[in-house]
Length: 268
Image 1 (cartoon, rainbow, N blue to C red):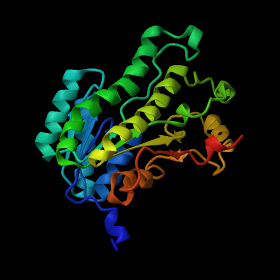
Image 2: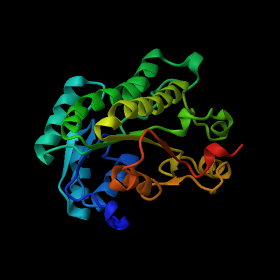
Image 3: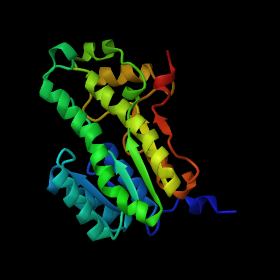
């Protein structure tokens, strides 16, 4: 019988975490690095990526590299993947975390700038497809790999806009929900294609995480709508899910969407 603790170790593995320089991406990179994984983290700002990589290397004693990446640009994707492989030797684990954002225009669809709609779709959904397209050939060649796509509860439940209004927040645009629902569908079909080749594909759909710079009344109202009573906590609540799906502990799990939301999406 395989030792359960050992099945969560990632010694000798290498991961690319897009958007891994901050927030949930950095938390995920930290979880992998804590288990012995070498990591490449990306940001549109190369200096931010380099700083985050240096923190990971210092804290966990692993090889870490920071790379510039704009997932909307295929040339940038090709370059970042090539640099990650050049530095780490391979990519065993791909975490598609880049995305987010709502743009500067209103979140209400009828008042929303078309450019912002396209930006959200490209950054969240199309970018995930394009990065995966670039990384997958190496995994297919080795007959092994783990892909983790970041979805969202926005992709599985409609949002009550009234929770944002008292705090003066714009709220969630429907294009973001559409992109994240697309991530969940992409995950299932990628798993259908790649799992027979030894590659596990799964998604994590977080709920709200914070508090970051969110208004206190919003954080409180969100917690009241969550069975566990609080938003997801940065630096803590995403770690176990990410490590599980990246490690051999999840070798018989593929095509799944692991919802990490404190029960928000089940409570009516």
